[in-house]
Length: 272
Image 1 (cartoon, helix red, strand yellow):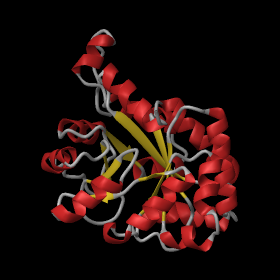
Image 2 (image 1 turned 180 degrees about the horizontal axis):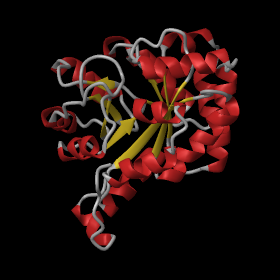
Image 3 (image 1 turned 90 degrees about the horizontal axis):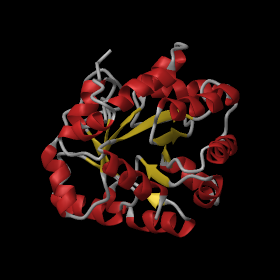
Image 4 (image 1 turned 90 degrees about the vertical axis):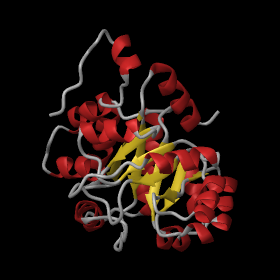
């Protein structure tokens, strides 16, 4: 059983959805970046998704772009990022850790996938590889010991969605709206997309993009998703010196359904 499957099974039994927290590795420097990784786990994140600083992150909005620039300006490089992942894995051996990055970084470093797996990463999502070209890369990930994660959207054509379902492992990353990452607009959580993926036998669907408040988390889970990933809101808060662990705790609390609330004695979840 993988860390992802164990996590989803455990949370389903408890009546909870998965909450994933995204951070840019090494933002704003290595020591602070390591502390922030621990902060999101302490706040209750069930899975951690990390970015590797890159000069041209085409899927990311201004918040994540700024985080990548801060890390690059601090001298953070790919090898440093793998050391941060290894440290996180040593401190938190059970939490799933996924990398979201771009093809240039993967292709430019010989052995990137094996190094990522050796550091303790569980999955790899290469944001700018289209599903049509993903099969050989996904196979290489699996051979290296990483779960390939592919991106699905409400407007993904059926043949492409079938390919995504076939190749994905760990979870399926569902974008809740078109465009780049960021909190400038909330997502639209398409129940039909979740149903299509489930019919195709895809791994659990997790919504990302446009998630920054508890009501977004609840809407995504009500649409049938197994979890959510929040990035820009967390990265922005961290850049302003906010309490990241507390914010993650509020968002994680929104993943509890009625069964979990009953288990906790009727505790109510309030939006901030």
